[in-house]
Each structure stands twice: as C-alpha cells, then as structure tokens.
Length: 248
Picture 1 (cartoon, rainbow, N blue to C red):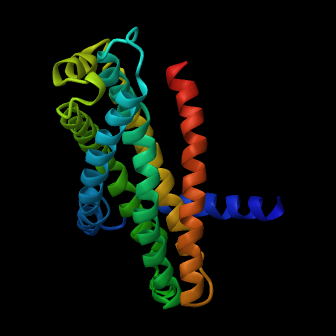
Picture 2 (cartoon, rainbow, N blue to C red; picture 1 turned 30 degrees about the horizontal axis):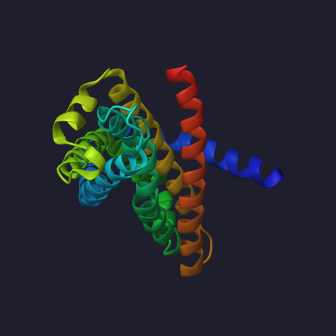
Picture 3 (tube, helix red, strand yellow; picture 1 turned 180 degrees about the vertical axis):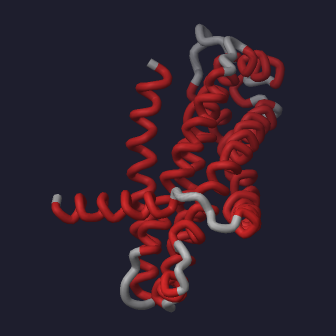
C-alpha cells in the first residue's frame, strides 16, 4: 500500500510538471508532429490488419452459433456492429496499442534516463517532463480517434466480406440490414471518448515508468513491461467506469 501511494505521488508530480506551457511553441509543434507520426500513423498498419481479421472472425463465429430458425439472420450483422463499435475498436484495440505504443514510450524515455540525457536537460534548465512527455501524450490523444474510426470501418468491412461466404445462411443483404438496424450514432462518440481517455492512460503511464528508471538496460526492459501491464489494468478499470457513466 505504501509503495502504491508513493508511485501515485510520483505520477501526480510528474504530470504537474508535464502539463505546463511549453517554453518554445515552435519546438513543441515540431515534436508533436513527430510523435503523431511515430506513435499514431506508424500504428495504422497493425490497426488495419487486426480490425479486418477480427471483424471477419466475429461475423463467422456469430453465424456459426446462431442455429435457431427463430433468430433472424440480420442479427449477425447487428451483433457484429455492436461488438465492434462498443468494445473492440476502442477498448480491445487500445489494449493492443498499449503493448506497441506503451513499450515504445517507456523504453525511449527510460533509455534517455539511464544515459543521463534527461539529467543534462535538467542541468540546462529545461523542463524535461514537459519537453519529452507532453508531445507524446498530446499526439496520441489527437490521433487515437483516427485509429478508432479506421478500426470501426475495417472491422465492419471484414464482417461484410465474411457474409459473402454464405455461412449458415448469412448473406450480404441480411448482414447489411443488420448493420443498419437500430443504429445509434452515439456509440461512435462513446467509443472515441473512451479511446481518448485510454490514450492518456497509455502515454502517461508509459512515460512515468520510463522517466523513473534507475539502473541500466535491464531496468529499462522491466519498466517497459511494467508500463504495459499497468496500462492494461487501468484501461480495463476505466472501461468499467466509463461504460457505467456514459451508457447507464
């Protein structure tokens, strides 16, 4: 308990140092664009691949498990849409990105800490937390809605592709009708809001573990692993809280 409170205090102090006005806006914007590309745009390929395959698999599995003639076939498209919009494209995708993006942030900042680059910045009077961490948090929070929308579109596209296999009576027409059935546009907003919160969790926790590394290369690896584990736990906790607040 004491260790947890100590970490929480360190995290709070780090975030208070991070969320300050940048000294040079031109340098901040340059760093921001670099982080958007490195953390966001560079993750686009994994979002595309996973979303297409998972959307296809969800549609096939639902089709195989609906064997009753009393259940209309458009239920397959309806259920696939709800799963993708409500959970997969926001929560599950961000859990996957926590492994890729979170470990990248923790290892990068951790390496700068053990090679004393952060200490050199502090000696020169630079707010190292603001300079290194703020562009990463802001960049990921700005680009994550793009990844979520891409994931939604490609997941549904994968489901439509699966409907052409005519598995257990599933047809493209019934699948598309199910996609349109009782569509609630608020679910897209809900998923985007969740993903922005998750982006903050991933980037801030990974930055915390990387910033407070002590030792050598082994500790950088441990910090990277710890950041992914903690980010995943906090994403799941935030998922429960946000779902309760926004959908009930």
